[in-house]
Length: 588
Ligand code: SF4
Image 1: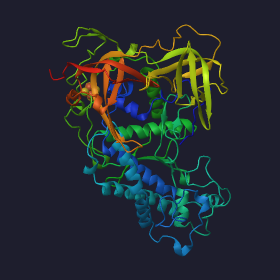
Image 2 (image 1 turned 180 degrees about the vertical axis):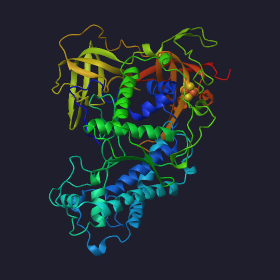
Image 3 (image 1 turned 90 degrees about the vertical axis):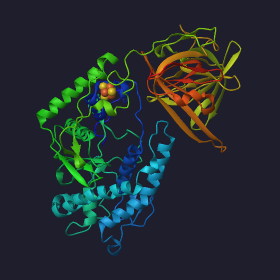
Image 4 (image 1 turned 30 degrees about the vertical axis):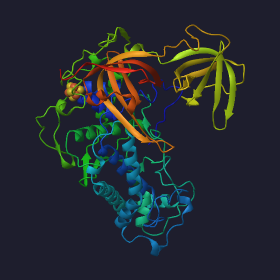
């Protein structure tokens, strides 16, 4: 619920440097875990339940957007595509006689499409793990219906208890400043307004919670702390009856350690609500475990608790995001695993240590790894007379600055122009991948042949014909300039090949079918060294067969790779002539 939107003038933190409830929880679980997942950006295995949970949430939200007062139970999933104002209210004899049956039918209208889209997304994920077909799709479909049953309890309660004042205001067309997403734009008396006692259709409309519109761009509906250091996104906020109830929907059964995090998450959301609503404390917090049909009630924090929570999180932001942090500041000291049974009921804590199920145990000193990470150096492959200098990741330079002249510019409607530049008789294509970054154009609006330019932070590469290309990503800029500046280089002066050494965090694999029907597959490895991380990627057939034996904790050198970058991510490409050498095995 975007109550507090970032103020571009005073926001010097930015969307990628804010704290979130999940980061705060990860830090509390284990500072070293946080380091691996947030500072090194290691992605834990992407299992089907992660994606199915998102599918359940989307399906529930799509049904909540609709109304039994305008949508037949048999209507297609895109019935609201032109907005709710285009649909006529159903006649009394057309209204559903059983709202729960209507909810179940609407789930069945939406679920197959959402489930299949999520399956496709999971299949494309280079870090996917597990087997999709081992999970019962019916179980997840049923969770959608269960969650809507919980919503129906709210609707029934609303029908029975709504005040005359609230009912009249709603009938007259009063809407909150930030309305629930219901597909309506028209103002004036509500088209579903009746007279006399509140009807169930009216109660559905009045009780409809605020939720994330599934069609809104990702993160656009976050609440941001007024000082910009924290952001979060509520699942469901019920506001009818003048009482604020924040609900978090979980497509799970609620057993296990993670249930402890959900308690903290909701308390943090209560803090965020209070800070963005003049100290108003939510009246209720609940976790909805759709897998077991349990609403777990969480005691809202007091104003003193909110104050201390805010100050604790502000200190945490300062400690881990507001200042330079190193691996040594993130000790491998996990908190004990907490015991919860189904429905998030607290039970005795289990004996098992957190490290026994940690995805990074073969990297971490508390598992079988150590902090003695590779740091450049030299490598001489067996049988090779050449000794290769290995560059630490922090010293790789995927970006260059170039002073040049526009050779040709072709305007493309709705897109950045096609640009060719020249310098001392050499030419290069400029590929402007993003036209705008942080609200500013990445290139001058007016460009013509002969203009002098500085390309700042562009990523050079050569295509298969040997032609030079310069990529403009969100971290690069093109500016008009009259002369070169210190550090600007010639067109062909960039270092085309690099040698690196690192410890394997994990391997990746993705495949698909190209537009011309050809199947393709790419493999990759994410490596860590003393100074950071990089991904090494290449076409399936470019990798030697030893790739299939690589495991977390093994150390490898990759020689003669080219570099690529996108924002803060640096990637090494396996090229013709690149070679891979195992330096050591985790098991040795
Ligand atoms: S292995 Fe243990 S100490 Fe290391 S990151 Fe994982 S949970 Fe933390």
